[in-house]
Image 1: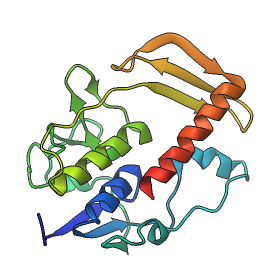
Image 2: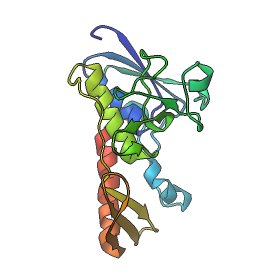
Image 3: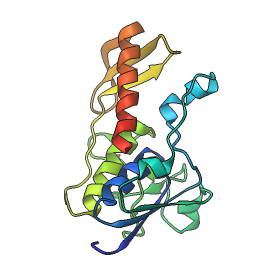
Image 4: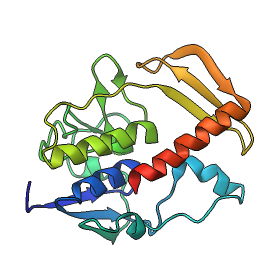
Length: 201
């Protein structure tokens, strides 16, 4: 795809990860309605009036060959474009995250119904979206030809700024008998949240 224009729709975790990685070697247009990156896993802090200032998308894209175009997102875009979708309206993709009906179109993140052998269809969230974005970025620049793979590890939940819950899970998303709570879980969740933002920068 050298010298070709890549268009990424959506500036969530998956979209930003894919755009920043592909933008190292290709011209990329990132289409999203937001001026600022919404750090979704910390949105509860904003609701409580304790959230910080979100970085702008342009700031996160600095130094990359990525142009940010603001445009309204259309949740029904996949179906309206004629892509095969599941019951929730998510585009059904293959093991290279290509639309099963339009293989020239890649779909990732919450917009995609990604099924991994032995795991099942992945749930929505940054934990599954970021690996998809990183994988697609590598695929587009020729750094990998392997199919997308994924294994779950933890499920975490913030309970205010002083408490939290971190559940260890099996690769197939079933629960393990170990759970962290209190300060340990809060610190782990904070580290994960910080790591997510660092990944898309």
